[in-house]
Amino acid sequence: MSETRLASLNLSQLTSGVAYYKSPTAWEDQVLYFLMLDRFSDNKEKGYKDADGKAISGGTTPLFKASDNKNAIQTTADEDKWREAGSKYVGGTIKGLKSKLGYLKRLGVSAIWISPIFKQVEFQETYHGYGIQDFLQVNPKFGSDQELKELVEAAHQQGILVILDIILNHSGNVFSYGESNPYWEGRVRGVSGFNDKTGKPTIPFLRTDPAKPAAWPDKDGAVWPLEFQDPNYFTQKGYIKNYDYDPEFREGDFCDLKDLHHGYGTVDGYQASPALLSLIEVYKYWIAYADLDGFRIDTVKHMDDGATRIFGSAIHEFAQSIGKDNFLLVGEITGGRERAFDTLETTGLDAALGIDDIPAKLEFLVKGGSNPDDYFSLFRNSLLVGKDSHTWFRNKVVTMFNDHDQVGRAKARFCADADKAKLVLNALALNIFTLGIPCLYYGTLRYAAPTPPCAAAANTCARFPATACISACRR
Image (cartoon, rainbow, N blue to C red; front, side, top):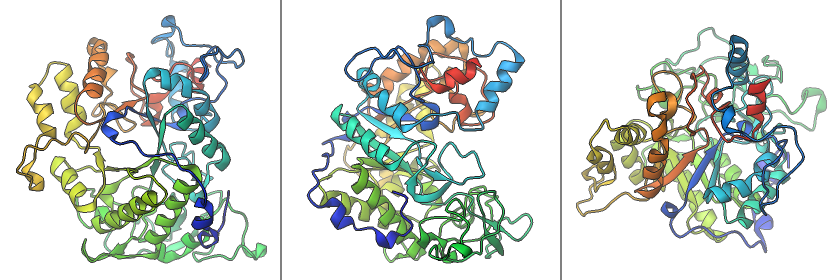
């Protein structure tokens, strides 16, 4: 829709008379599938089957064959191209994902979790989606707002729920500091200005009136909607160096992504900032517009618990008002099991993703390196949250053993160990048929390849066979 002001949205009008898709009774009965949209499909494959099982003859990318396994990198030049593809857009689109809904349904997937899809800063190849420049527009490289709505409608027709990956903690790299090495020191830093589409801070660091074209170069600069151009929406305290020091990891910028100021106070007495209230309206809009079924919330560790609670309460209340009684809110909560479950209890989020012990203990169990009790005890009744009954956290954890952050030697994928890659089906079975909300990462295949330095680059060849990236690997 490319709206410029939050104030122009009318949610009551948007939701009037609309019959929204109902929430599932139990999310633990669903099978989630997490994909990076740019790395999934460009809608140019040939020979795949559509939702009705009919083979599609058009397209240029051939189907994956058994003989293609492990042949993407044969020379140094191949490796260079593979790594290069991991640092830029490669062509995945919303239409491409829509065309593969039949494949996903036949695979047994009942919910898709899509990486962030909103417009990114123009001067960076933020294909992963975590550097938002416009919170009210779908990234044009992926498609249009209307295509998002059509994707969700088509998914619902196949009985597939849709979860969007969203960001509350920060925006993209939308302004530049006026100081060198602006690391967090607990003080507000000087800002040179909002970045234009080339990355230069040529736009004044204040709310601009788009009604005056002479003062506004284009909509690819600064941050949108208009309300977010208020400097008070940002903490402006520089980059995080110590990710374990509080309040640095809450107030500082996550790399060059600019931290948003959510408010202040205790959890029970938290005072929401205009920025947090705007974020609530942004994401209520996307639920209403596209008929979404859930959110995965990025970097919850870096947010105040009070801010997370207010956001979660507002979103749950809004979703219930339009008939989505079990709208899913999953938080990426790092810092260990105690931190994760404590955050769920405090904030009211439905489930946690990123509990440190889950991926490793599931993997070591399958590979024969640990006692099964080490894994299953993670779901057992926990005194950490003051529960004395025999309660199992069957629906409080999204379980997966591969994800987009597993990259490099320290966080290698399951199949990086070629001798044990054949056990990946065992891991999938354990993940899907035991406790938790199971999630299959699209890069999980019986494939062992060198791990590139970029998180998303590891997806280039190790994922759904008929994709744009496979084509990129072969060039």
